[in-house]
Length: 445
Ligand SMILES: *[C@@H]1O[C@H](CO)[C@@H](O)[C@H](O)[C@H]1NC(C)=O
Ligand SMILES: *[C@@H]1O[C@H](CO)[C@@H](O)[C@H](O)[C@H]1NC(C)=O
Ligand SMILES: [Zn+2]
Ligand SMILES: [Zn+2]
Image (cartoon, rainbow, N blue to C red):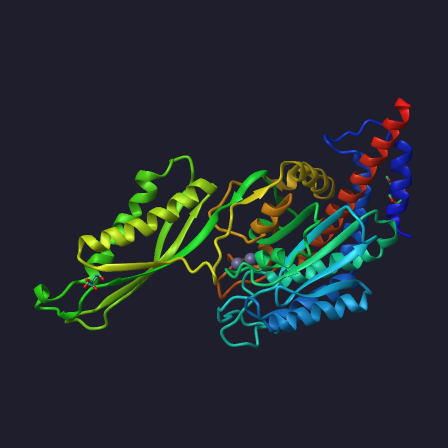
């Protein structure tokens, strides 16, 4: 059918003749270049591009929050139906998992998140959000469109795939832990590897970031109620002041990172919420504080969690207050550290390097934001990278979670081509490895 057959015929012929040029890769440079060039061409074709942009804008106009992505999910299923791609639905309320290939191992997955944010869009354009107070301001609309684009060009190669590609459309990335729920459904149990991307408003279009090991932090939230005894602000001796107690708690919490954490193990504790009182002359009964804590190691994270609870309750007691601490993991599960697999890192560098040029791969430092892709990458080998979209001729691109967030749609073909190339070459490599294994067994007989 497609060009993959040609590449493969060429590969099996040449595997034992030519030493692969790239480390840990059985496909040689030429073959990788051919695959990624072919996919990039397909991804840039005006038909595919226009179709993808239309889907992205439709989703942008109708943003849905975590676990409420019913219309988004319907658009996805509708397109998969048109492409004759089979899928499982619902997975984790609104999630969809599509299948391309033999239905047999190896299983390699691509992931896109679908949810929007509770933000009022301030960008005035033709396809502005039609839902007041909700907006795709993290680019997940573009993620969905790119995965559908990849589905389309992969489906054209389906007869030449030795293995199965899973298209993972995931709900509730923004705090809800949709990935965790999808894993719990069991449908991803046999996945051998997973790739995910996030569009980036920092990096130039045509570039990607790549790193091995921990790339994003483990993250959790906490809320505490500090209970005192309210009364007249001028008669403090008859009250127990929770405002002062909460203030001391916040100061004490800041010492966890500065005094108790290993300085080389990055951690963050931020109190972002403080609610108490409403009058100039009344000491309130209680104060509520809340915030987030982050760490780049599992140990650092669990130590922070334990100490946050202790510091809040014990510091409250110093000022005669009672405090309760709630981590609310049912609604906001702790996100693990996002760890990129080393072998997949090499694979990514080979593929992206051939497609975009080695100089377009930016090595990035870990950051303290969190991604629930980490649940997948904890369950099986995973790889997460950022896809640049910045083009200064197209104005200023602001960071995600802003009401002024915009996506440069010109970046979509790169995401599509990377998605498609990463998984097909993964399956090809796997096939060549087993061929090599069979051959060596044969040689010994
Ligand atoms: C790349 O693939 C095409 C088929 O799409 C083939 O005609 C061409 O010869 C290949 N080129 C290389 C360098 O492998
Ligand atoms: C704190 O809890 C103790 C024990 O239940 C109780 O005796 C005390 O009155 C409480 N203090 C406040 C400020 O609520
Ligand atoms: Zn986000
Ligand atoms: Zn996001």
